[in-house]
Image (cartoon, rainbow, N blue to C red; front, top):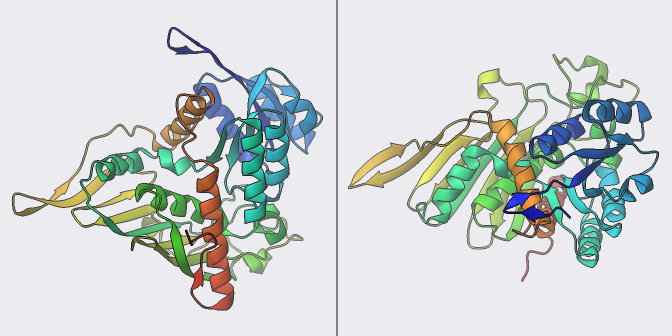
Length: 370
């Protein structure tokens, strides 16, 4: 673990398991936080080598080799979703502090096994719900926690991409590897953020629908750019393009969620937005945006407030905040911001939405009963 000298943090080493696109973002954020990238591993050695060269890290031949390195105190797990569980278990069992990319796992039993491994090791487990670090979201959260919104009744959240299916034909679009499409990729962020803003109420029931077709067309799918590309036309696309859901929570909160990898909408309507409606006030903002509008009343008048907050580079700030929280948790100054119960809660909700879509009915969320 890192040490503090006269209040200053002594950097601890980071190992990165999985060196795809998101690993580079992790490496940059960790470096900005003062954490050296000590070692990396990827199933494709050339990909690991590229990341290692950028950050002066050691390339490991196996995960076992990486987690055996004494200087590696924290591990960022950036592998495909179906590998989250075994990689997290291995790192936690080796006594490493883990920042695990979302979703936590492929199902609830895997979530429970990861949480148990963290409890046995006594190390930090933080789930990569990075949107909690959005400057706009944190601004709204501060007003909510101060009681300015009263009780939260409803949250509407959406994250759309026009033609943004990642890695068409690869693991992102193969259900056996990813667990699903934009619901488990983008929806987990929106659901976690909504629950966090509202004080983490327990989801009780969910009704959902999913749509597919654009990605499944494969060669007929038109796009301008592709995260995790290029496409593999001989691959698989058996996940949804879009998902929508209505979630009922304990205490009466409802959450309306819409997410899409491939929505036929003009760019100006592709908003990563949230609307929070409370008994005293409400707010509208974009996760990656630089302003918040709060609708409330003062002295008998309806007013719109625009609070000032620092949002020079919201996406960078989100990642910096995530690593600041991780460091605080590792050094014992705070509990993990997005912990194992938060990861499990979102996993249960995602599973309920998929089940509702399959069965065309509202369903109970696992673990919703006290």
